[in-house]
Length: 330
Image (tube, rainbow, N blue to C red; front, side, top):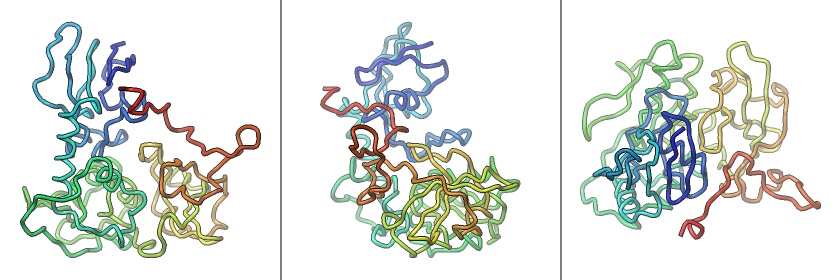
């Protein structure tokens, strides 16, 4: 198996593994951010450019560095490859520019956006963004539209990651929406104002990394950090029936699919489970969902802690690889 060195950490991975997935096996700060890549969606990645890294050594057979920064989600490792991520000022500067580009048309909707608190773009802008923009032109604007009886599309917030399009292509029987127009006029839209209506269309909400696609049954109901995420399941003939219930007291405000540490859905769920089963009696509760202590959702949520040793409560970060902090790398 090829060995790759990322920011001084060496790891052996199966042939065909991308730099991004190799970095995820190491974990911590070494993992490049990714807004468009989704491991369960074939051909995803290579759109947002936030995962750019510098390959300082191509391989043992060809040690020449790659002349330009490459997208780690699309570049396969080679034996002896050496990669610089957070140790490269060039990478950090390029990532800052990419974030500035993504925010050119993105509105300051965080105070009213339902995605606030679990938005990848918020985290990306906080870690790599600039405090001001150099963009002097008017932002493009679109009116929010309903692309189904349960899904609201805010095109103003879209970063054109194409995740929802790939999901519709690969998961649903027929795709009624896609990319219309080109360049700065490109937008996600339905075909001649048709409604997106199939059993798994709600999964577009889960794969969207920003607040462009939102759940109409949950909109403006509550901030996500005021809810309690609970693992639950039910017998369903259409999907796995394994979900997260976002509860306020005994009331189920929202149902979503279970996700990994990197925010990717483990198993997609049907619209019946997502939109129609909003009574606690419909579900078998399993217990609190694992929430990273770094997430705003975990703040003031004592139920997300588990007593592990000597009666001391600790957050459960079992899904997260062993972190490597920047000081250790330097």
